[in-house]
Image (cartoon, rainbow, N blue to C red; front, side, top):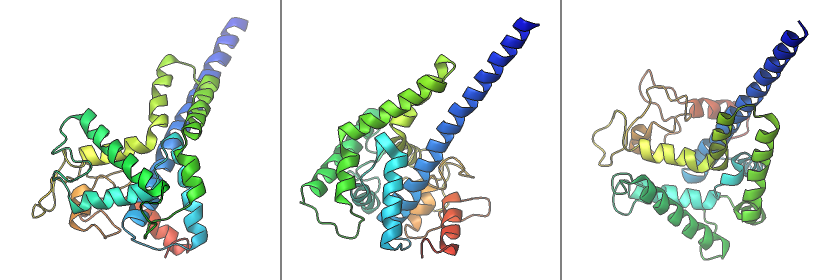
Length: 256
């Protein structure tokens, strides 16, 4: 009886710790994604709505916190994304799976263009323009010390709560979370799925009929047809959860 009680208690602890790991993983996934689609994409890149300086700084800070080791410089993200729309799936596109058919070359080209833009912002070659700037936080976020600091926090969390070896396989997702979201959208969103609009010349696709995974970001064909439409869904069965969130943010006057 005593041994069975010990085993039962051990199993309950393992189950509880597994739940903590899963909550941490999915919270990181969706919070990072939330600030990428709302702040970096819809606000910084496309100016689909406005924010007061206070809320812009708040979203900037929270993007840094929740992207962590994979923090994406808002200015560099915004300019690179605009270039993507201007030259979608042509040789000038900074990340097109049509011309960069190898996953490694695709990611290397994306990182190279991103680093070039970050350097231009940080040394003052590129002016602020119409993208959010916060030089101090940009410098902190782009620091290798900061990135490795976040990685250390992720590792320590898993050392504390992981109860099985397979759970450590989730760590790379935490480390590269922001970049991974970008890869999923730009790779699969231009390779796999259906098209509502065949009259546009790029290879954009709608990868998921109901995009719960990426908060509407995988409606790439819809988005490329109407790049300034805040709602990426166009058909009755398509649900853009990112748009639903912006509707709530407007109602509570965080954005306008």
